[in-house]
Image 1 (cartoon, rainbow, N blue to C red):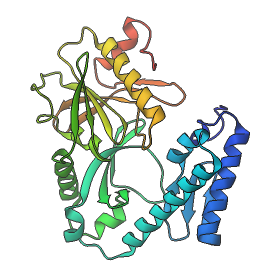
Image 2: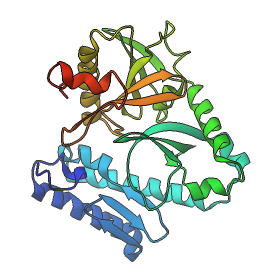
Image 3: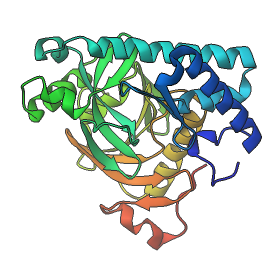
Amino acid sequence: MDQLLPSWTQSFRHAVAAEEYWELVCETAELRWGDQVTCNFFTGVVQLDSGTAVSIANLARTAPHQDLAARRRGLYHLFATADDVRKSADRPKDWTWAKSRLRSRLQVKWDPPWELMAQSVDVQTNRIVALDHPAGCAPVAITQAERWGVDSDQIWDTAIAQSIGQPGIRHCDVGAGVHRFEGGLFTSGITSDLRYRLPEPLGHLGALVTCPTARVTYVNPLWCLDDLRTTIGRLLHLAVLRHGIEQNPITTSILWYRSPGTLEPAVAVTRRREIHLGPAEPFVSLFDIGDPPSAA
């Protein structure tokens, strides 16, 4: 696919196929909302006059393998969900309502028309505060949080604690020292504190983690640095495989879990196959011992 085209089109084999899908997006959005909607081809975002913005990037990832009817059903469902979230957002919400629903998770970096409660982790990954909404995950805007009348530290602490303790996450040892965790849309939230998720306590080197999708997190404890490049290559391979075939993708980055509350950049591979290392040692020195790790 032409790298000059928007990133959401990359799953289509050629530009004409992507343009045909975009025509269906516009047609479906206009049927639902009429002239109250703006469709931006370059960002892959449908925005309502009310401020609600809907990204079609996840649907576009699977659309090339679907027939027209399935594509249309997917868009109708996405837009219906957006309406549900918008109507819910129109209801008054106070801290009492929001507190029990707060969660933290990792999220691919994106630029909505409002400022999110977010912290940068690396060049392509943010940690955000979100609401566990019946329709899915609703990121929290700073202006929304300001109306709750509590400080941001309390919001973050509450969201992180409730993500760490979330039930229903399944653990599996996939071999070669890698652990896989699978659960709901906030599975990546456990990366704030892994002390009670692994069968053995972590050593002083911590662990490498990657969260290719919202529902899957891989953790590889670091016991020594001798096979660091092999470990990174293994995790990149797992991340790229899951990130490319499932909905709700987050990142192919490898992050360094140092201790509870400390998650640092390790290796990031962007869509253009640009590799960002570190800035912490030992990752900034990887180039000193040979070629960079493969992205699979």
